[in-house]
Figure 1 (cartoon, rainbow, N blue to C red):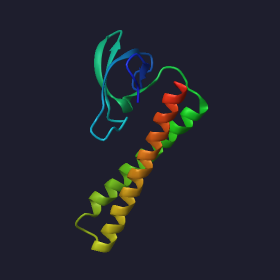
Figure 2: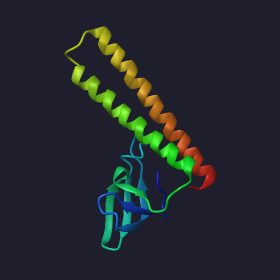
Figure 3: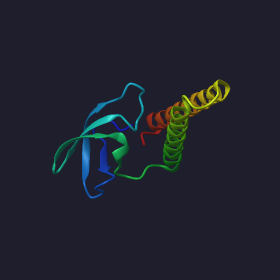
Length: 125
């Protein structure tokens, strides 16, 4: 999660560098859907976290943990999608199995985010 004052780059416009002015976490504290108010040379924009990246490269451990968070989020969204698609089509026992997979993926995602946040707080990266 970016903090006020962090320098960021828009993923869709890599040449546009801005400064985080305000942070509004979403209810689940997901960095992908955290809302950032960013001051760019072209003006102030409201942008979701998944559309931003840090301006400067971070330490290798931070990058590894970030990749872990991103992969954990992808897995979570994939199994949630499977669960939604199967909602009225599969047997109850198979649906319960999918629910357990969603819970496990959610926990993996939570733990990965916690590790990244703790590392960032400890090392300032």
